[in-house]
Amino acid sequence: MTLNRALKRALSTGALAFLLVLPNTAWALFSDDEARKAILDLRKTLASTQLELQGQIERLKSENAQLRGQIENLQKQSEELGASQKTNYRDLDARLGKLEPQTLEIEGVTGTIQPGEKAAYDEALGAFQAGQLKKADAGFAAFVRKYNASPYLPLALYWLGNTKYALKEYPAAINQLQTLIKTYPKHPRIPAAMLTLGNCQLESGNKTTARKTYGDLIANYPDTEVAVEARQMLPRTK
Image (cartoon, rainbow, N blue to C red; front, side, top):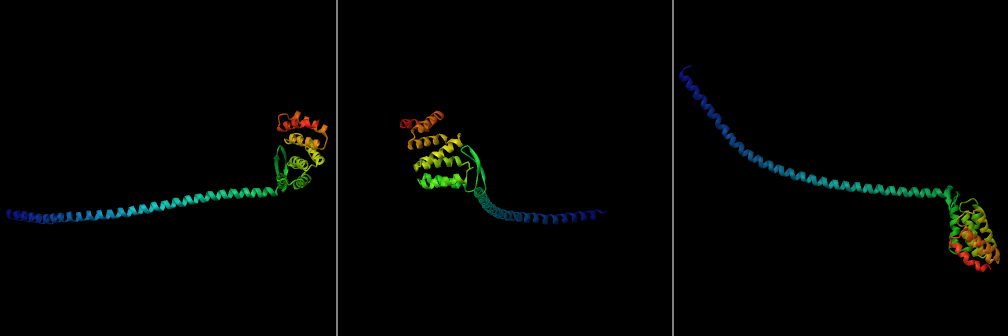
């Protein structure tokens, strides 16, 4: 290659390089401006997105609170429903209990209670407590006849004897109380029944029998309140 041709080629290459540099420099300056604008736009976009996300978060919080409220409400309804069902079951059991015989222990006496039996006893006792002696007398007498195997029978005999004593029907009262004492000698009502029996005997004019009844009561149940009352009645039997 000749010298002239080499020089021409070098000059041509330098010129091309110069031309390539100029557009790159201009492009670099143009990219910085665009980058700044892009950054500003990006900041705006990020701010807008952040606001939107914050709004979504707040909406989610609100929805979450609503869901919690709904859950709590459902839990409350569930608890109320459970309580209502328990009440309904108890009511159903109570109604069934009135229709079916039940085995119960009443003051140490075990037996089967028939439907309507307790209601009859409670009605008679309620009449006695209200001072309706005739009604109580009829109620207890009917109970003794109808439910002669009832665990309530000792109590019915006891209250029937006391009702007749209050009505001053002393012989009938003595009969009921003696039946109770003979049939159920270990029943917890026996001490009180013996006191009423002694009072009936005393009111009937049978002082000797009354004194013996009071004496047996004091001897067999010395630490009871009715024994104290029996001691106070003894002077009247002389």
